[in-house]
Length: 217
Image (tube, rainbow, N blue to C red; front, side, top):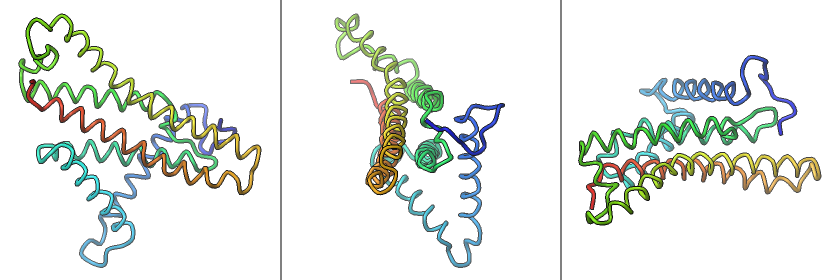
């Protein structure tokens, strides 16, 4: 879809290049947001404080106080996905979330951490979550639960990738057909979708991890 990309090179595919660009941008914003804290708060600090406090509130509401230990992971996922989504709307730039490699990598991180947390919290009793409420349902429930858990990273990655890549394709077509005023409502809608998709990914991640910490019923 991208005929011309800034920073395009022969060494790395665009999604890798723009993943590093996103990381560098977020590192710079983090640095600027923590400067001159004892003086007057600047606009960057204000924006970052609103974002961080909102994520913290969402985390506590979804996972409870025990979920705060996962704040670095959840905040990183949300901000990285949001910035990557929005970067894809800038002409000459590519969002790394429009590539399945990026979304699968993030989904696998959530998948692995979910089960590490489950084993760390419950020990070997964690397997009870896969066995169902009564013993005679084990042959039925175990494969269903395994398939359900394995489908989670697939669902997370394909949903994010599909929505972002599909939206960019629609925008590209509209800009070719009617390059002036008509595509602008779509741009606004795409910005909204970028935020929603980042929120959905992180909310599902929190729910999966919170479910791993709960006792089996």
